Image (tube, rainbow, N blue to C red; front, side, top):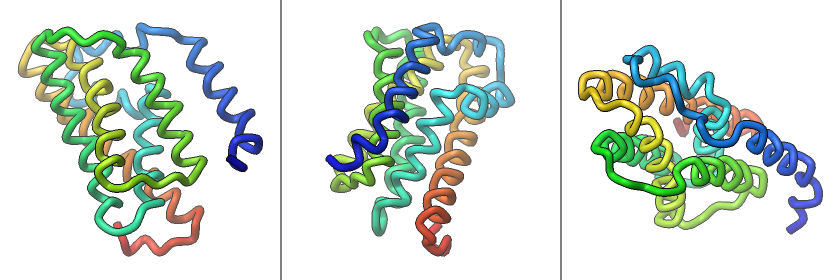
Length: 177
């Protein structure tokens, strides 16, 4: 693992940042609509990092994985939001969100591609927890739909930002978008 010694300070710093704000990373959305949904991934560091990392990781793949991986994230995140709003029990939500930051950033830094099915499974698993965390806070269906639409739009935007950044960093042509 030659990437690990080189990136160890970055990974250690990311871990320390996550420990500085344990749990309660998702309050304050219960009264928000589309604008609150759109702004949260842009302002919440955990979501921002994961959403950009998914796009960057997708850019490191070839073929259809470049759009299927981010599309899987957005779709499954929506399902997680519905499950959370329905009040289904799901332990370890915040821990899985933390693990998503570490795992997806690590996959990007390691330039580690997985077969498409595994890539979809990894992003889908983490996406479900990201969606669930917000869905459980919003019980009003109209607010859930509005917040969810904004959240999903911002997520797709950040995936595109991550993809474009990775493409530029690796000098790939953006015609694949």
